[in-house]
Image 1 (spheres, helix red, strand yellow):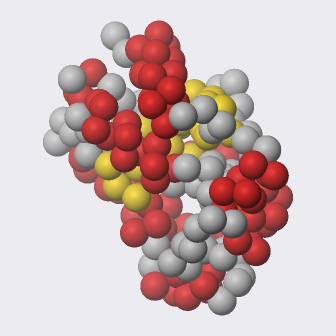
Image 2 (cartoon, rainbow, N blue to C red):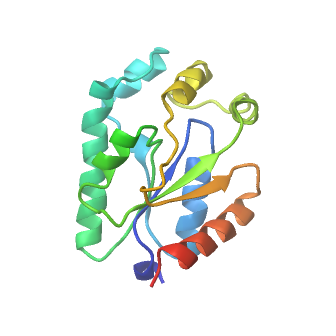
Amino acid sequence: MASQFPPLIVMGVSGSGKSTVGAALSESLGMQFIDGDDLHPRANKEKMAAGHALNDEDRAPWLEIIADRIGAELAEGNPIIVACSSLKRSYRRILTAHAPSTVFVHLQGAREVIAERQSHRNHEYMPNSLLDSQFDTLEPLQADERGVLVDLTQTPDDIVRSIKKDLTDHYVG
């Protein structure tokens, strides 16, 4: 079943549910899931843990690592799912450089909803104080980008069903 779907990047601000949805999609579609956070260089993790937002220069090597991985897996016939904030259009261009068929799954929701979710979790190196910087940086998907918009207030099962339907309707076959 996995081979019919393109590579997917589950995107959105910190706390939007990228890892949860990515893992659920992985199970449902039979595709490998990688949390992009695991691919951050140590310096990025340390900077965020200290409460400082990453800049474009910090993100560039991380985005290249993810793009290379997506491209390499696709070349082997294994489209994968990656959780990656993908906040800017320029980042998304880097991420699709080796796999233009990649589709972004944007988990959207109000800042208040996400802040409430974040208040109940403790991320290894992404403090809740950086949420505003995430929203300030976020550039919504544009009409010419391959993407699916998802309301993150749905249950994970409903989100997965919605994504599968949108992918099947617009990006499969």
